[in-house]
Length: 488
Image (tube, rainbow, N blue to C red; front, side):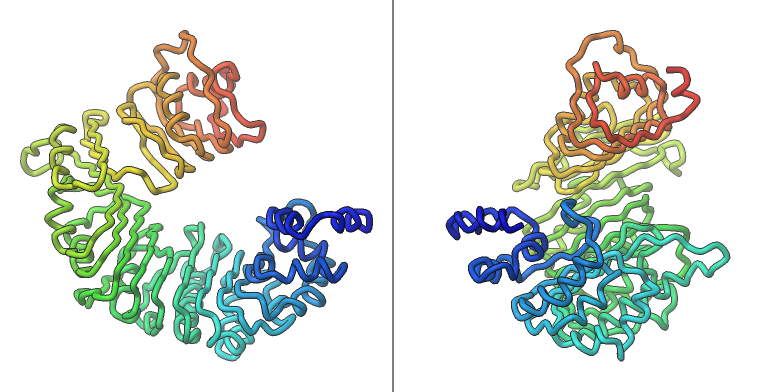
């Protein structure tokens, strides 16, 4: 360390600043703060002290976040820079030690990651240190719930009860909270307001990001209690059947300016639930929609104009990714199925947007219509078929391919070129490839780390395991049928 410091001392402050800015703040503070006056002066700059992240999963791999390192932060580093810290992102396992290590007079943003409901159940009681010390100070709060698996034999609502408790106490006790992100990647951690007595809360929130269980839970959050909310991002991640019916959701949402809805399962309530909800947002300026509708109508440009856009006179940004799926043979009366040209024509009044559409008859059993605005803004693109129109989707990290016609090598090459950043791919196709004897350029997937081929013909297993066809990383997680793999 002494030799390193001598070399650093030979560099001008400007070069040191550039070097330190390209390292993790916590690495820099742990390694160099307190060594000498010159380095202390540089490291006391707000660039290094206003935003600190002390989280295990994303911390620098140069060393483990050990108790020794945590001790130095709590006993030496944090007390020296406490008045400069504006945002803290903390691993929940050492949350209490860090928050009690010193005073944070200018802390206004707090992120709690890997948070466990059982812990939060205690942390957010009114008499807790977190509420007592920060309830009037925190304006932005991030809660990332740790994925949880229910204990066999335990009540299925136990975790949901705790999550609701956390959410309501945050809303009620953090008086100056303006931004709340309450999320989890686990299907067991969504908010579910299944008991009317649990939904009483008030808040000055202006922006909310949340994952809920059903559309009813979304309506519950828009029942007027969050009456100052102007930005609402909601992801609906269904699990099981929700039996409660939320009433009293006909009030205009006059303050809402930005609304984003992602529904991760198929729905059959577009006409009688979603459309009335959208028509309550009369002052909306920005709208983003992602869902799959499995009954009539076939949602196209004319439907979007009639039921949504015409009710939002201030709307200036509208992005959408909508699929319509209908089964003509199950309809009460004959359905006039549109062509792709017919669908495109319905968007003739969308002057400021590029709209991509595709129609498909799958297994001759159902009609599939996909419409989306381009450039594409979501991180996933599902159920790609052979009629995929191409394009560039830099933001997409997860895709799935599904068709009754085989995916040939040239199509997989198109997919790799269209989705250069994908990390997870799921392929479902039971038809053998027809042109697998032809020579095609090698497909290079520089980011792909998860591949699911469990429901595919063995041709695709050979395609992905043959490095003369597809070049993969060395640490790819492959899911495949063992019986098909034995054949290869």
